[in-house]
Length: 303
Image 1 (cartoon, rainbow, N blue to C red):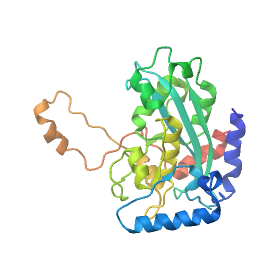
Image 2: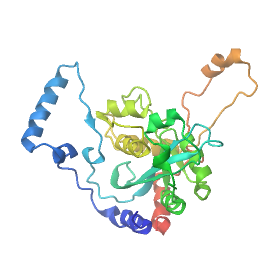
Image 3: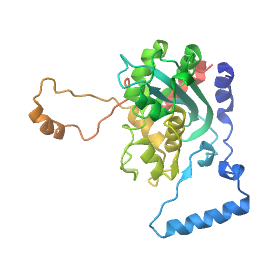
Image 4: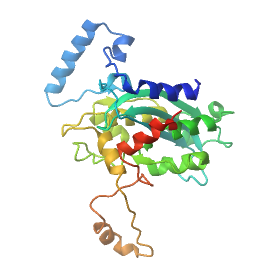
């Protein structure tokens, strides 16, 4: 692993440097000449023009259009995902933690993306067969592995906001495993973005990614989910702006949670119909606006 201070400094130093757009896709670098790619592009256009098919591309962050923004008035965010031995943070454990930071400006445009950071951890007990089937991780692969607490905590604290898809789930596991990272500002890319208004159906990460024209294959791993979230956050929406811009605005707004304790099961549907039209879930406490976030980072919080 590279030095954490070097990584943090790099994000800070390059805040005013433009992101160079990707010229060649990973697919081109792997197998094809520019001529072959041109032919493939024509075939894809013809196939999709029929209206009966949609062609998906393998997700790599280099293949997503990059911004040429100068990065002025920018802040640091970290996207996090965990793979666990189960759903209960009190009794189950993290077996993989992945995070990747990026720098974004006040318009919700991502201007620089850090490298991926990933850790495995031995839970100290055999994995359920279902977990191995889902993640591809095995007892032998995890044996002796451990999350680097200090490194992971420092990266999380360098960010003005921590983002996850279903943040309420990831946050509970992260804070239990890394107690020194408690109290950070979290935002939920699943529940704090109105994906339907943006033209998407559903909120599942893989389904959202497919509607954006991308896929990732293989086992369900934390690093791939992190990259998928970043790819979605930096999309340019038909209505203008990015999902990230909406997420920061929504997460900066106070939220509420209503529980009907003791209500009988027979009235659950009636109570559900009375819920607020817009709910906020995941960012507790709410994050400050982009201008407020910037101040902490530029005072050296990421150093």
